[in-house]
Length: 423
Image 1 (cartoon, rainbow, N blue to C red):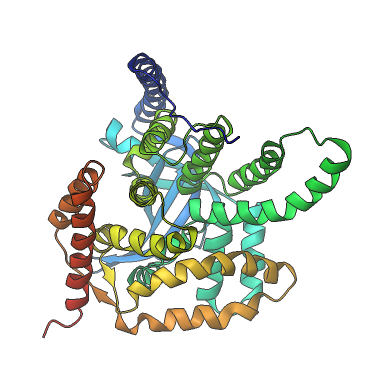
Image 2 (cartoon, rainbow, N blue to C red):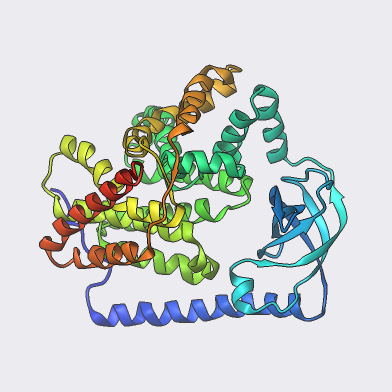
């Protein structure tokens, strides 16, 4: 007999209790962040150790300099500048004296600029830096090496490559997130399951295989999260994975808007800085539209769902992509296919690098990059996005608005395609 799945809350009292606990934890989390803020802004300057996340050259008012994006060991992210001749320190640890002038608590929670002096450069290579060095040595093409470093060690892409992949609609594939975590979890599941089944059949047939298999998978993924130094996109994906499994294991309906809302709240009360992360809300939006589709077509067959769900998610996420990032090309809609094929490419690329044939997939990436010739920068008002978001929430309550949402997304796609041919 199949157990019926239930919702997390059964009455208003449980909802109020959850809300009270959430507010308490959120207040405590913000208090900790505020203490860090006061410590940083206590004097005119502060000494901090930070890792360089990005380093790039910028020219403004006929002056050329370098911009560094850093993440402090204390958890805050900030920007600073250096001279044009400053050495490449991407991925390295720096000790700096920073001058956070007029720093507000809001800027501290988001990102801020601070003038700085570099006091010391840590030349010791971490395991992550050694991996990046291995990738650099395996590829003569700098762009290809940069792509693989983004895929394996969450290194940031240079602006030009970011622009290329934005116009092709595949930027989400280069930022390690829930999609990559899901692919890795699936691969590990198929590797671990036969081994586990062999021992289970002989020694412990009474054990819950799903729970036992999930534990080593979660440990592996958590180790990978620590290895990458917990980038926000991967952190939120891992939290969602753990929460979803705990709910599933207790036969609570995972594929529901209530569960998504609870998951978002839990993540934000422990990591309030993610509230200001565009990447976080885009990932939430992606899951929202998946659940919305499954809600409307819960009786649809698996094959139809497999074919139609990627199209629906692409269309409903398109307004976010073109309004926020602006990149678009005639090949942008093909990202539906490329996203599906990436589920094969990603684990395969890891395998070929492990066995020393990392260049075997390079022609595919070079072909993808070469499509950039049709890139076009869109200028679409945020009003279109606001309308899209309103329709998305209305679609939760009325099926009519669900279809209006689809047609509106098609309208934005048409608008984007027509902008390629202004004459």
